[in-house]
Length: 200
Image 1 (cartoon, rainbow, N blue to C red):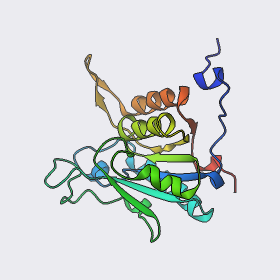
Image 2 (tube, rainbow, N blue to C red):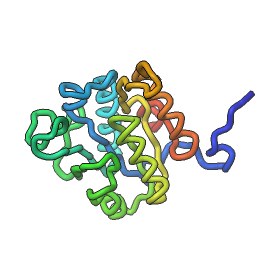
Image 3 (cartoon, rainbow, N blue to C red):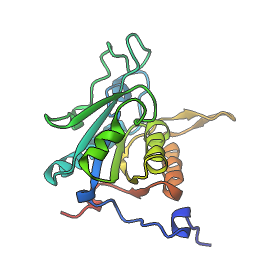
Image 4 (tube, one colour):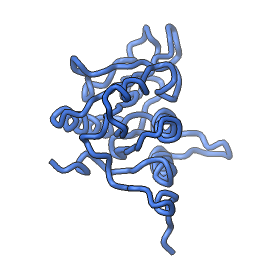
Protein backbone atom coordinates (compact mmCIF):
# COMPACT_ATOMS: atom_id res chain seq x y z
CA UNK A 1 0.00 0.00 0.00
CA UNK A 2 1.37 3.40 -1.00
CA UNK A 3 0.85 6.07 1.62
CA UNK A 4 -0.25 9.48 0.40
CA UNK A 5 0.58 12.71 2.16
CA UNK A 6 -2.01 15.44 2.48
CA UNK A 7 0.21 17.45 0.14
CA UNK A 8 -0.17 14.76 -2.52
CA UNK A 9 -3.91 14.44 -1.95
CA UNK A 10 -4.37 18.18 -2.48
CA UNK A 11 -1.90 18.40 -5.37
CA UNK A 12 0.61 20.70 -3.69
CA UNK A 13 3.99 21.29 -5.32
CA UNK A 14 6.73 19.22 -3.68
CA UNK A 15 9.69 20.70 -5.56
CA UNK A 16 12.27 22.63 -3.49
CA UNK A 17 11.69 26.35 -3.10
CA UNK A 18 13.52 28.13 -5.95
CA UNK A 19 16.48 30.10 -4.65
CA UNK A 20 15.46 33.22 -6.56
CA UNK A 21 12.11 33.30 -4.74
CA UNK A 22 13.32 32.28 -1.29
CA UNK A 23 14.75 33.60 1.94
CA UNK A 24 17.06 31.37 3.99
CA UNK A 25 16.09 31.28 7.68
CA UNK A 26 18.59 29.66 10.05
CA UNK A 27 17.10 28.95 13.47
CA UNK A 28 19.01 28.73 16.77
CA UNK A 29 22.26 27.20 15.53
CA UNK A 30 23.89 28.19 18.79
CA UNK A 31 26.51 26.96 21.24
CA UNK A 32 23.85 26.05 23.81
CA UNK A 33 23.00 23.04 21.67
CA UNK A 34 26.60 21.86 21.48
CA UNK A 35 28.23 22.92 24.74
CA UNK A 36 25.37 23.87 27.04
CA UNK A 37 22.50 22.32 28.94
CA UNK A 38 20.59 20.86 25.98
CA UNK A 39 23.13 19.14 23.69
CA UNK A 40 21.82 17.72 20.44
CA UNK A 41 22.75 14.32 19.07
CA UNK A 42 23.70 15.45 15.56
CA UNK A 43 24.52 19.08 16.20
CA UNK A 44 27.93 19.16 14.49
CA UNK A 45 26.78 17.32 11.37
CA UNK A 46 23.70 19.53 11.11
CA UNK A 47 25.75 22.69 11.61
CA UNK A 48 28.15 21.56 8.89
CA UNK A 49 25.29 21.07 6.43
CA UNK A 50 23.75 24.38 7.50
CA UNK A 51 27.09 25.99 6.70
CA UNK A 52 27.03 24.46 3.22
CA UNK A 53 23.50 25.73 2.74
CA UNK A 54 24.55 29.19 3.92
CA UNK A 55 27.49 29.22 1.49
CA UNK A 56 25.12 28.31 -1.34
CA UNK A 57 22.71 31.09 -0.38
CA UNK A 58 25.51 33.64 -0.30
CA UNK A 59 26.82 32.58 -3.71
CA UNK A 60 23.35 32.76 -5.23
CA UNK A 61 22.28 36.04 -3.67
CA UNK A 62 19.61 34.56 -1.39
CA UNK A 63 18.68 36.84 1.53
CA UNK A 64 19.73 35.29 4.85
CA UNK A 65 18.08 35.72 8.23
CA UNK A 66 19.79 34.33 11.33
CA UNK A 67 17.57 33.63 14.34
CA UNK A 68 19.00 33.25 17.86
CA UNK A 69 17.11 32.31 20.99
CA UNK A 70 17.64 34.71 23.91
CA UNK A 71 15.97 33.69 27.17
CA UNK A 72 17.08 36.73 29.14
CA UNK A 73 19.60 37.50 31.86
CA UNK A 74 20.41 34.60 34.15
CA UNK A 75 18.24 32.11 32.26
CA UNK A 76 19.09 28.41 32.76
CA UNK A 77 19.67 28.03 29.00
CA UNK A 78 20.23 30.56 26.19
CA UNK A 79 20.99 33.26 28.76
CA UNK A 80 21.69 36.72 27.38
CA UNK A 81 24.68 36.96 29.71
CA UNK A 82 25.82 33.36 29.31
CA UNK A 83 28.58 31.88 27.14
CA UNK A 84 26.36 29.75 24.91
CA UNK A 85 24.06 32.20 23.14
CA UNK A 86 26.59 32.70 20.33
CA UNK A 87 26.12 31.14 16.90
CA UNK A 88 28.18 28.10 16.01
CA UNK A 89 31.15 29.01 13.80
CA UNK A 90 29.78 27.22 10.73
CA UNK A 91 27.00 29.82 10.45
CA UNK A 92 28.57 33.04 11.71
CA UNK A 93 26.58 35.96 10.27
CA UNK A 94 28.27 38.35 7.87
CA UNK A 95 27.80 42.08 7.58
CA UNK A 96 24.52 42.81 5.84
CA UNK A 97 22.81 39.62 6.98
CA UNK A 98 19.84 40.06 9.27
CA UNK A 99 20.13 38.79 12.86
CA UNK A 100 16.98 38.53 14.98
CA UNK A 101 16.61 37.47 18.61
CA UNK A 102 13.55 35.58 19.78
CA UNK A 103 12.09 34.59 23.13
CA UNK A 104 9.47 32.10 21.91
CA UNK A 105 9.70 28.86 19.95
CA UNK A 106 7.87 30.55 17.07
CA UNK A 107 10.48 32.78 15.44
CA UNK A 108 7.76 35.09 14.11
CA UNK A 109 6.62 36.25 17.56
CA UNK A 110 8.09 39.59 18.58
CA UNK A 111 10.99 39.53 16.12
CA UNK A 112 9.83 41.29 12.97
CA UNK A 113 10.65 38.16 10.96
CA UNK A 114 7.51 38.41 8.84
CA UNK A 115 8.30 42.02 7.96
CA UNK A 116 11.92 41.16 7.11
CA UNK A 117 10.76 38.44 4.72
CA UNK A 118 8.13 40.70 3.17
CA UNK A 119 10.72 43.43 2.53
CA UNK A 120 12.68 41.04 0.30
CA UNK A 121 9.68 40.65 -2.02
CA UNK A 122 10.00 36.87 -1.76
CA UNK A 123 7.28 34.47 -0.64
CA UNK A 124 9.12 31.23 0.08
CA UNK A 125 11.43 30.25 2.92
CA UNK A 126 14.14 27.64 3.23
CA UNK A 127 14.55 26.66 6.88
CA UNK A 128 17.33 24.87 8.74
CA UNK A 129 18.42 24.78 12.36
CA UNK A 130 17.57 23.54 15.81
CA UNK A 131 15.61 21.83 17.16
CA UNK A 132 13.28 20.02 14.83
CA UNK A 133 10.57 19.26 17.37
CA UNK A 134 10.35 22.72 18.92
CA UNK A 135 11.52 25.91 17.20
CA UNK A 136 11.96 24.57 13.66
CA UNK A 137 8.59 22.83 13.60
CA UNK A 138 6.74 25.69 15.27
CA UNK A 139 8.25 28.29 12.94
CA UNK A 140 7.68 26.20 9.81
CA UNK A 141 4.01 25.67 10.66
CA UNK A 142 3.54 29.37 11.39
CA UNK A 143 5.24 30.33 8.12
CA UNK A 144 2.85 28.13 6.17
CA UNK A 145 -0.39 28.57 8.10
CA UNK A 146 -0.22 32.14 9.42
CA UNK A 147 1.86 33.90 6.78
CA UNK A 148 1.08 31.93 3.62
CA UNK A 149 4.72 31.23 2.85
CA UNK A 150 5.82 28.16 0.95
CA UNK A 151 8.28 26.27 3.16
CA UNK A 152 11.22 23.99 2.36
CA UNK A 153 13.15 22.26 5.15
CA UNK A 154 16.68 20.89 4.73
CA UNK A 155 16.70 17.65 6.72
CA UNK A 156 20.45 17.15 7.17
CA UNK A 157 20.80 20.72 8.45
CA UNK A 158 18.26 20.18 11.23
CA UNK A 159 19.18 18.68 14.60
CA UNK A 160 17.26 16.91 17.35
CA UNK A 161 17.82 15.53 20.83
CA UNK A 162 16.69 12.55 22.84
CA UNK A 163 13.42 13.34 24.62
CA UNK A 164 11.53 11.74 27.46
CA UNK A 165 8.54 9.71 26.34
CA UNK A 166 5.57 10.84 28.48
CA UNK A 167 4.34 7.24 28.41
CA UNK A 168 7.68 5.94 29.64
CA UNK A 169 11.23 5.56 28.40
CA UNK A 170 13.22 7.66 25.96
CA UNK A 171 12.65 8.55 22.31
CA UNK A 172 16.03 8.77 20.61
CA UNK A 173 17.01 11.86 18.67
CA UNK A 174 16.97 10.33 15.19
CA UNK A 175 13.45 9.01 15.72
CA UNK A 176 12.37 12.44 16.96
CA UNK A 177 13.91 14.04 13.87
CA UNK A 178 12.40 11.61 11.36
CA UNK A 179 8.91 11.74 12.87
CA UNK A 180 8.90 15.54 13.14
CA UNK A 181 10.02 15.90 9.52
CA UNK A 182 7.43 13.37 8.38
CA UNK A 183 4.68 15.31 10.15
CA UNK A 184 5.78 18.53 8.47
CA UNK A 185 6.09 16.81 5.08
CA UNK A 186 2.54 15.54 5.38
CA UNK A 187 1.10 19.04 4.93
CA UNK A 188 3.22 22.03 5.86
CA UNK A 189 6.56 21.80 4.06
CA UNK A 190 8.67 20.33 1.30
CA UNK A 191 11.53 18.29 2.75
CA UNK A 192 14.88 17.91 0.97
CA UNK A 193 17.87 15.97 2.24
CA UNK A 194 20.60 18.56 1.84
CA UNK A 195 21.86 21.54 -0.16
CA UNK A 196 22.47 19.41 -3.27
CA UNK A 197 18.72 19.68 -3.90
CA UNK A 198 19.63 22.96 -5.64
CA UNK A 199 21.77 22.43 -8.71
CA UNK A 200 24.55 24.91 -9.38
